[in-house]
Image (cartoon, rainbow, N blue to C red; front, side, top):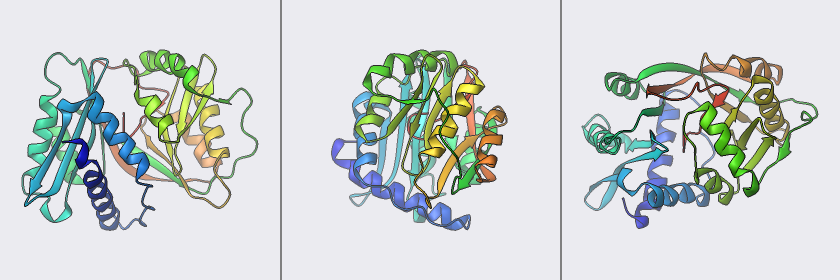
Amino acid sequence: MRDEDARAVHDLSVVTFTDLEARFHEPPSPPPPPDAPLTRYLHLLETDPGGAWVAEEDGQIIGAALAIDRDGMWGLSLLVVLPGRQSSGIGRALFERAREYADGGRRGAMILASPDHRALRAYARAGFAMHPCMDAGGRPEVGEPPRGVRDGDDRDLPLTEAIDRAVRGAVHGRDIAAFLRAGRRLLVVPERGYAVLGPDSIHLLAALDEEAARDLLLAGLAAVPPDKDYRVEWITSAQQWAVRPVLDAGLVLKPGGAVFVRGELGPLTPYLPSGAYL
């Protein structure tokens, strides 16, 4: 993948995930503003050029895979194939290229999978342990945000690194700064946890204790404008601390995809991973 491919990969992702929602009879998500995804793709091309691959046909990009390496943890940030070309071997070839980027001593790995049965089968067969997820969605009804949660900025990046090491066994590094460049909001409980808020969902949350995690989650939901739908995703069985807050906020739980892990990672709780940066 090259820098000039970023826009085409973004467009391909929108088409692919819109098709996935239709197949699962889900209402279509509003298309994201193009600048934020471009920040993600260009950032990953800078940090992990060896993990960035596209498949072309007649000059058109019909598939893409983005793999990352963070502090010895490999992650699959993206794997998409044009709907009309799925189940033709393109996704398998891209996944193999992305997995090659994991060779060389990575001690752990993570994939966030959609509920598509082909993705679930591929990652399970690749030797990853599957942790099924629930998603929560709706219009949150939350009172005042908990005390002790404040807005964060670049000065809080050392805190995010310390939390990451304890919770996931690997730092996100410059990924948090990329979130901030994309206009995402950082919330912090000093010395205990942080969360990144997106326009439609919690993008990332990690904490040292469940009370801090709940406070960050409630503060994120309290920040949602009235009459706006919001999502909390990747709630595995290890994230019981998140279930009561989302239900009390009026969100509806439903089956989601799965978190796949392999090797040596942190406890991964309290933790809601990032679709982009795991």
